Amino acid sequence: MPSQKVKEKIVSQEEDIKKWFLVDARGKVLGRLATKVAAILRGKNNVEFVPEADKGDYVVIINAAKIETTGRKEENKKYYRYSGYPGGLHTRTLKILRSEKPQEIIEHAVVGMLPKTKLGRSLAKKLFVYAGEEHPHQAQKVEKIEV
Image (cartoon, rainbow, N blue to C red; front, side):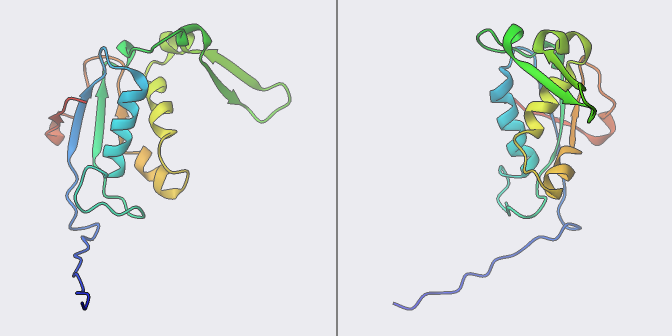
């Protein structure tokens, strides 16, 4: 039986229309929210997904300060920063980071699930995280989704 060639239409970056999604993080578990958001940023929810191209959408996350975690992560989970100098390793727990910069908790989780390449860095720029209810993206006609 002869095989038939399937014509595949590849949508260029100019033709691709990006959507904006709004996600409310209140009461959501950190890891489960991060996997869904990373898939949307990557474009895995679109029909024309291509691993090497940016086919994803923009994501705005509000209420980052009210994200939930399971177990004893508030005291045990640690975030590290290294300045590059001897003795320059800075360690913060989830509890401290939540009080100082709660949006970094979600950013760290989502960016860790994206590719570690130029593509991943460009995808990370399409994520906007805010600690409270307010966000400055009303002009983009943000569509609210439940994750």
